[in-house]
Length: 334
Image (cartoon, rainbow, N blue to C red):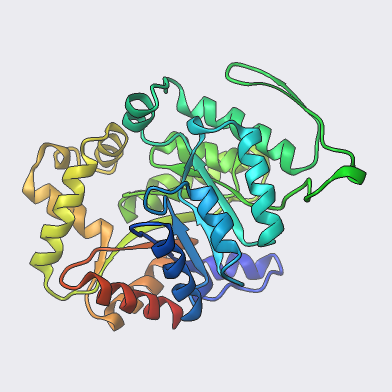
């Protein structure tokens, strides 16, 4: 389906490997840089990250940009409440100068408990806040003057005169947004360059989220942006061990209302209450497991089903380091 859409517009179809990225986790920034360099060496095209240990993600990307040559760097995500859009724009300009065309900026409201409890900030209407934030970023990246005075931001911005610029004052960086609920997918269709899902069942993405993404794009008369589907991967044939590990992740995510509401909309209302049968059913929609060959086949099936891209996150079962390297080589050889 995806290849047909690209061919019909005259674009060359993207390779399978180009449509599969890895969500990278690390203990600190040096470990994170080492892992991205390793991923590039084995042929991985896209790395996604949320943090680099305790280090700031955008600062990490600036550092890793100088240590790599080709691999795309995707944020999944930068919480918009923690920095002003003009501040983030200037950070993006720096990364774009260091690694032209390699950054994909994923932004979103962020975890409500973290924003409100740790930062002490109110998160009352996150999608409206995100929409204003995106409008400002679009203007800055297009080298436009901005006079924005709305609910959340009062911004007057004039681009620097070209003769005094020290870095590019426009950027062709794709602006992606996090999406869990259907309203977020529709908003992504209206104004973003892609939607990054998290812990969403595959049937929910195909049957509910994708139609909303398309509806949002059609309403604005713009091309349908891609869905980057978060998929957990376990390199194990021990189904019980995989289920046990995934249950832990579901129990943790069930602390957050955004996930429990989304699972209920996807038909798993009792999973958040600890119903084992429903949790196991939910697990089957979130994880791909088995041998390398089985996983390779499953990833190709997911991409053929209507999903544009996959963001793979390892579920370690026995030997995390060994399984991490296996996943890197698997994706690099697609």
